[in-house]
Structures are given as C-alpha cells and as structure tokens.
Image (cartoon, rainbow, N blue to C red; front, side, top):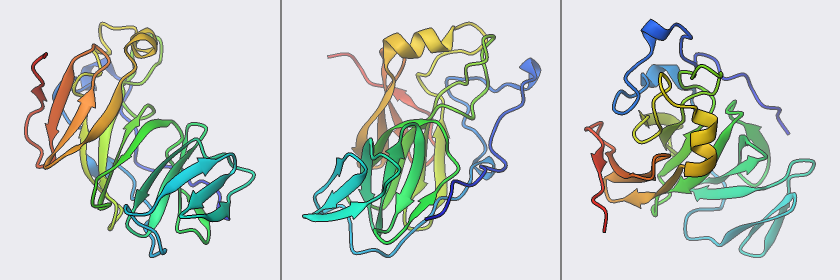
Length: 205
C-alpha cells in the first residue's frame, strides 16, 4: 500500500493582492496535481459501498485497513474514497494516495469518466486562515483536472469561511449533462459548465 504523496504545485499565494475574484475566477489547472487511474474490474454500474475499513464491491470485500472508508465514488477502473478528510484511490488491488488532504463531497459522473469533489485546502485564505473551498472536476480516465471553480463558496476578503461552511454546508450535488451542480455555502445553487464557461445561478423554485 502506498502512502499519500505531497500535492506539489497546489496552493495559492497568501498575498491579498494576488487573490483571485472568488465567485467566478477558476484556479489555474496547471496548479492541480494529477490523480491516479486504474484498470480494475470496477465501474459506475457496480454496487460499491463502505463498511468500516473495507469496500464492498458487488459482494467482494476489499480490506483497506488501517484506513477507514468514509465516502466513495466509483469510476472506470477504480474507486476514489475518503479516509477522514484525505482522498485516496484503489483499483481493488492496492490503495494510492492522491495528495489531497482535505476534501469532501465525492461525486462520480453517471458514466464513471469524471470525478468531482470539494477541495477545502488549496484556495486563497480568509483572515482566519481558512482556505476558500473550490469545486474540482477531473477526467477519471486520465487523471487530469478539467475544472476548478469557487462559485458560491464565499469571499475570503469579507467572510469568516469556517463559520460560513459550518452553517452553509457546501457540496457537490451531481453531474448534469455537461454541467456540475453545486450547492454553495451561501445557500445558492450553481450550474458550472464543464467547458469552462461562467457559472450560472440556479433559480429558486
């Protein structure tokens, strides 16, 4: 079993003047690390669930101790899972660290070709040192980042982000055709085009 690797290149400058506009400006994709990919006998059509330190894949039990499996997202060739706040990947034969140490809300696309999650580690920080959350999308078959967006995650220059996230509970909702639906920390939902277009607020119903 491989240990988690350092996520090189990720992060944002602490200099206030260098911070991007938080609602629409994406993080440069070349700052995001590649993710592991696999060729395991698993995919989005399989029934995958967590059971303590194990994955259960269509009845097959995969022991991942000493790690816990707190959340899963099955993609083509493997399963991404959250161990506490860390993001890991397994092709069912071995587990590999991704270098992402603080994530939540793992979601795979219906075809298993894309993975989305909230990165709570590498955005610009507010005055209390809390990073701005960003929704990140990867091509799960190539391990390459496709999108990173701060839409709906607050303003690090004005907000207490820890308080905002505790009460607002931001999350990735689902993939919807060529967009990602995200529930923002401010209570507003956004559709984020996967082609890099501007995020759109979802009208309240």
